[in-house]
Amino acid sequence: MANSFFNHIEKKPIVFGIAVFISVLIVTQLITYQKYLLNVAEQNEKTDDYLEYVKDKIETNLTDALNTAKTLSFLVENYGEPKSFDSLAKKIINNKPSIHAIQILKNGVITQNYPDDPNNSVIGYDVMADTMRDKELLKSFKQKGFYFGGPFKLRQGGLGIVGRVPIKNTNDSLNFAAVVIKMESLVKTIDINQEVGDYYYDFSKVNPNTGKEEFFIDPNKESLFGKNVAKLYLPQGDWKIHVKLKKNTIFDDLWRIGFLGFLFAITSGILAWFIAKQPKKLRLKIHEQTKIITETKNKFENLVEHSFGAALIIDDSSFISYASSSIKTITGYTQMETIGTKIVEFIHPEDKEYFLKTLKTINLNPDKTLKNIFYRIQHKNNSWRWFESNITNLKHEPSTNGIVINCKDITDEKIAEESKFKEKALLDTVINSLPGIFYLFNIGGKFLLWNKNFEEVSGYSDDEISQMHPLDFFDEPEQPYLESRILETFKTGKSFAETYFYTKQKQKIYFYFTGVTIKYKDMDCLLGTGIDFSERKKAVDELVKSEQEMISIFNNAIDAVIVMDKDGYINNWNPKAEFIFGWSAEEAIGKKLSNLIIPEQHKHAHEQGM
Image (tube, rainbow, N blue to C red; front, side, top):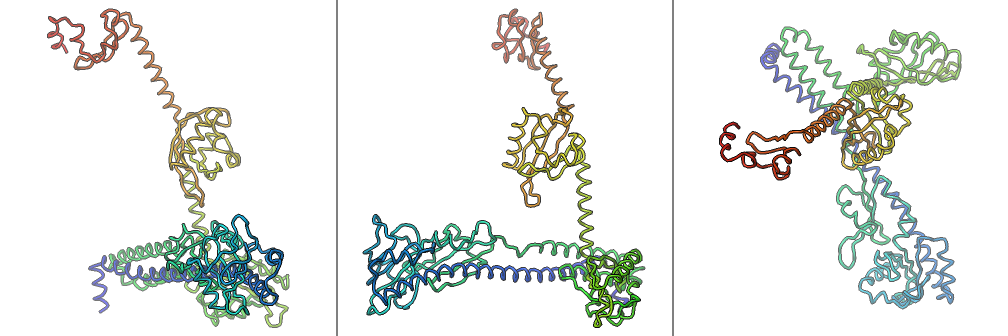
């Protein structure tokens, strides 16, 4: 049966490769999906936390308003309506910036209001007679508790909310103590700047008159609160708090994991196809290659997992006397396989001397900890893994009686660091191999990257260029032109310029510059190149000079000079031709020569000669 399977692979290696590709792709994309679920949970948790934070801010301000209204209600219930209401009200709302005014209502009519504007007084205003306001006043009365009406336009001006608490022992009349809070004051005291934060937030309420939900901090952002929004209900005014993350972070890094999985699946499929094409070697290597594929898959899965740490204790002779259970996770060896073995047997030959010197140092310093010790350990699968350790001398502790090594596997970080270094080296090589000069600066004119040619042509050192502005490389007369081109590039996305490059040696070199805008490290930047156009400029200047000389010869010739095309139409007519034939250049150019100055009897011969 096994032979039949291998024969089938040998006959159709491409099918085997595709099958491996699909299998590995499914595994890697399942890993990506698990990471997606983790990201969703994390984002939702952060949004819920922020929602609670906003709610606490609002409730703090509403509680302040509630206490104010209850204070006024208590005073009226126990001592009657104060004779000097303004004096009392001023004391009650002192140091309460969110409260705009406090009021007393009798039978739904405002009888007291502080502060009251004589030009726009609300005293005498019958709330119950206002069909746009009466429903929420009645709700406060029916609940026999504090309730906020609004937001709505205040008669005093502006948008606000009104909190009312019934005044008891008034024979069930519609008597209330009320506080007025303007929305702008509420938003200001909440002190949450959503323009610079990570979240949008707003409040909404179902209008009791229209039945429609209305947003009232920023109605222009209502469309932002359609999907993926966290909500909380505030019973004090039947409001909803809406919170939404400005930038969805769920998919951050997912594409990298998915793309790496896709590449890994392609690599695995190609490798399987390649192996299947070699039937003579396949039977001998199938077990080894399967193991390699499995190990590679496991490494890929570990890219999204946290690394595991382990703890070891070694005695005076460097033998391991204790190993935590997690040692198998990072070395492949069990506790029993590790204990009783000299630790140096696991250390890479190139790191042994350094490790032994470290042990010697720690042995001479009881109770001391040496941090960030880096070395390589041989895994049970014979691979070398990079470890980072903190080593502490606890020989004096009876419970320990040895040197404690807390270690973790940092192989992935080392590989990533090396990859980053190689990528930078490649970028430097590419930039320095570009023809002409290369430059990259941000919108503030700060140089971020440039090539060696830039230094050589300009004559400035690396340190000097890093402190210079792009306009510093041009003479004063050319600077306004260059500045306008730079601004045009940041505005339109690309531009060019032809002008003289001013070197440190005061030499002017004619260059053709290009520029495009890109995002680099979250900054708007201009990336461009410059090509030396000195020779081209020189050739153009010489051509213009030559053309001017030819025009001078043509105009100053002592004979009539006439230039015409293949059909006999005149293109040029010099001054001497004007003098001889009497026709001006304006009259002659564009006409047929035979119709202008050739006698009738000679026209046929002239045409034949053409």
